[in-house]
Image (tube, rainbow, N blue to C red; front, side):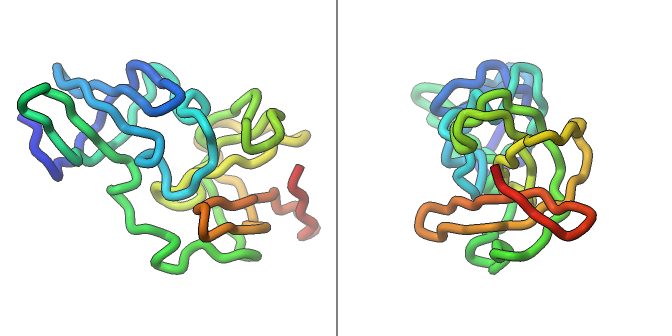
Length: 165
């Protein structure tokens, strides 16, 4: 039996523009787009998740009258904006989640969805780079908008040169 505050692993059953429908055993739940990441990196959860993905969520609310369950990915992790972890110019070891063929925050060009920090996902322009899911890549925050909780990240090159496309 699920309870508010519980942490569970769920399977994505239907990504939508506004959120991600998931299932844990016989329990269906929704993670709305603001609860997917501490960074606003995409305008559609179709860029964030695919059917069959496994994610860990925290149960936020259970409406006993309707059976609707609200969950969050970002609630599992401290807010990196409040804790000072989002630093322009800083370098990060980020985990590649997936290639997005047309990323709205990257001028509809291909980009990699990366987990910059736990619970904080960003789009990294793919450029000419080919990397794999799960691979750790070195990136730098080139710009940050604290009002809109968004960042621009770029690749770090062996020479120290950076670029954002």
